[in-house]
Figure 1 (cartoon, rainbow over the protein chains, first blue to last red):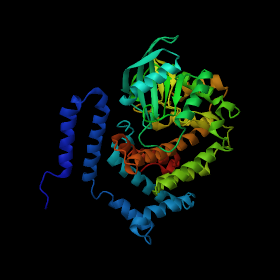
Figure 2 (tube, rainbow over the protein chains, first blue to last red):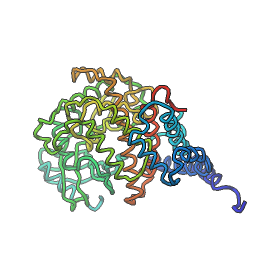
Figure 3 (cartoon, one colour):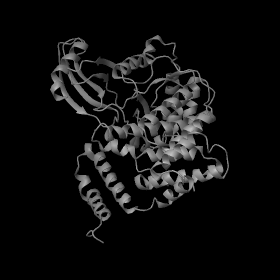
Figure 4 (cartoon, rainbow over the protein chains, first blue to last red):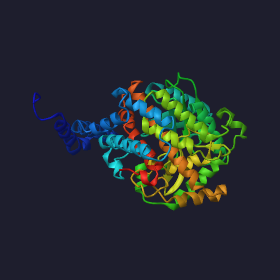
Length: 125
Length: 337
């Protein structure tokens, strides 16, 4: 390991904890919302750093569906296929693509607002 | 804004046919993701309107969203709405002269009440409030394209649902990002279009957060910049969509009540109970619409350089809209893994 600890994710977690515990409450009332948004940015940064590599299964699934397409163009290809009606009919192809769409969406939510998928909401941004 | 204080005072005095006016308080109000709101307290002297006036100044934000009515159109619409007896702030004056405060603005009378959605929802369930909102929605929808005063809204679409679908598809294409889940939603909407409804005036952003509540009752409906001719069920679908229930997901009407309470009020005024099948379509459309708006708001940060935490984080809400698109459109055997 080249980088010195603590990790970037740990530093962000520490910063957020200090912010929420000690500093946010010192902000004037009209800036409390901004204080909440700052904490949310730090949390997204921390979760993103900790999730490194977790998109591998999604990328693998995209590669299986669009093996002949360059990796950076696979999402575009998927979007175009959906628009063209390729997955309109019930069946294994549609079910496979839906699983992939759910995986993409849940991965994004896991970083941005994990409570949302669990039926809760961190609040408006 | 501070530099325009004297000019603003003179304009208010002139509008109220007063001898003079002094701005005694000028304060930016919270909220307003697209437009800015300022509380203006003016001490007016001389004339029939002498006394203290509490007003709200509304102007464009630093970077435009690129959709909706301009301030002048919104002001003209408010005049019609107010005359129709629909609860809304009373419009006072509209100023297109950027020399006064540095940009165009309009002024309305201050209406007391709570608009913060978290606080409105936290106040507890209220069937009475939902019924009042249902009645108000029906009163808005009673205004038809035959209203000559609103000719600036343009010709109504023949098929409001199809027109909106084409608009959002175009906007997503213009944003230039390929989002497979958005395409999934577009495809579902295109294959499930309801029979066209006769277009009526729609608020366009009818939801918790855009109305004022005072002593538990509806005081005013705010933020009319997205109003236009459309399908009346679009407002009800937007109101009931999950993204506007805040922390009270079980209260399906805007986080404040059951759908039945909202529909009861609507039926009392409009004479029809909303069709759940059409509402489902419009709730899917609501998720798509919020997705488009979230991306446009994000691009004010990414592409127009507005350094705003609010705008940056709104872009991160896009995934919530896509979750809703999948949840609402997947068949029973296709639910989330």
